[in-house]
Every structure is written in C-alpha cells, then in structure tokens.
Length: 126
Image 1 (cartoon, rainbow, N blue to C red):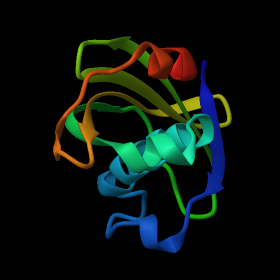
Image 2: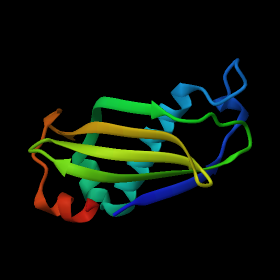
Image 3: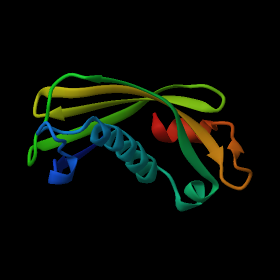
C-alpha cells in the first residue's frame, strides 16, 4: 500500500544555490512517513508507540525549485522484529527527484524502548 501527499516547495526549502536544500528532502521523507502512520493508525496506537529513524539512504536524482508542485510517496518493505524498512519517492510530475530507503524502529512510549512489531501493524501498513 502506498501513501502520497502533494505540496508546493516553499521559499524556506531553498538553499544558497537556488534549489531545494538536501535537508528539506530529509524532512519531507520523515513528514510523509509520519503522515502515513497517522492515516492508518488509531489514536490509541499512536499514544502507545512512536518511531525513530535508524538509517536513511538517499539518492538525489534531480533538483527542485521554489513553487514547484511535488508529490511524496511512501510504502513499507519488510519488517523485522523491531524495525521496518520504508521507501520514499519524491517526484515533480513524472521526474523522480529523490529515492530513499529508511530503517525505522518501533518504540514503546511508556518504556522508551524498542517494541515488537505486531501483526496488526503489518496489516495496517501493507
């Protein structure tokens, strides 16, 4: 199951070279993952669990500029006991700007420790 969000590049996303700063892409990768989690989970699940990033692998393919319409799409790959790979593509129309693979770890908020990924979560996100 993929999850997408469309937005417009803001002036705050632009660096001194006149294009989107790499840090903005990292923020968008995180934002789309969080939005996906919020879209498919209950408030009760969100109160019990959160996620932290363990790793990002990002391939920057093309530049993007202020006021362009962008689509970020994310989906999950294979989970382990406590972590899950997540993929993201950021596009301008048909042009792929960024491809990313991230590893996220599920955290039990009460214990502040990694928690087992349940079959319920797998069913929600797949």
